[in-house]
Image 1 (spheres, helix red, strand yellow):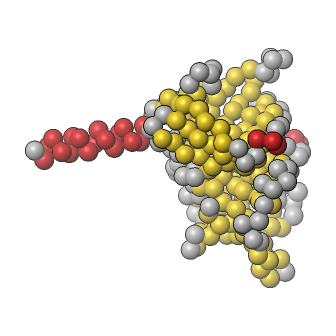
Image 2 (cartoon, helix red, strand yellow):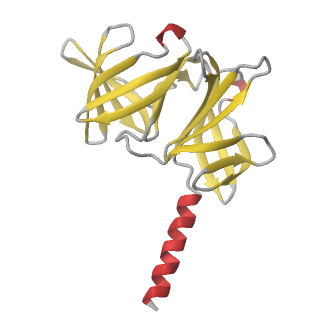
Image 3 (cartoon, one colour):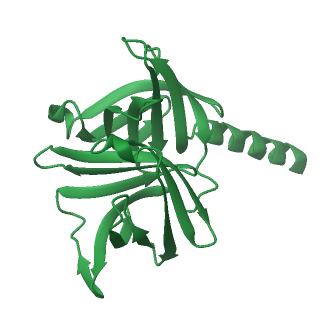
Length: 234
C-alpha cells in the first residue's frame, strides 16, 4: 500500500510540475522582412511578461505583460502594459495552452515556446517593484501601489525590467537579457533595450543581498551612474 501511495504521489507531482509555467520560455521565429526574432516569456508566481526582439541587433519589436492565472488549460492574463496597444491595459485576455516540461503552446496559434529554465538557478525569481533609492546616504521611498511602476521580473536565468503607468496606460521603456547570482554578485547581459540599442551586449555587475523580502541592489548603471536601489517582491 505504501508503495502504491508513493507512486501516486510521484506521478501527481510530475503532473503538477508539467502544468507549471513558472520560469522562462523561448520562441525563435522570423519577421516578415526575414529577420530572426526571439520571443522570451517570463512567468513568476503571479506575473508574466513577453519581449520580442531582433536576435542580431537587440532591437525591441514588442512587449506586454501583467498578472496571470491558470485553471486547467485556460490562461487568463490581465494586461498591465503593452508597447503597441495601450487600450489593452486593464483588460483580461483568455486563451488555452498546452504545457509540459519542455514546451508551452498557445492553442490555435503557431506560437510554441521551448523551456529555458524552471525558475532556477538564479536567486531572484519573481516580480519586483522598485520601492526605494538610497541617495547621499538617505533612503527615498516609493509608494509601490501608485500607478507609475518600475518592475523587474526574473526567472532563474532571464530578466526584464519595465517602466509603465497603469492609470495613464503609458509605456516608458524596457530592457532585458540574461542574469546570474553568485557570491553576492548580480550580473546581467543586456540583449535588448528599447531606449538605446547601443547598450545591447553590455555586461553589468552589482552587489546584491536579500533581506526580509527586499532586494538590495548596488552598482553602476549602463550609463556609468551609481545606483543603490531597493526592490520589493510583488
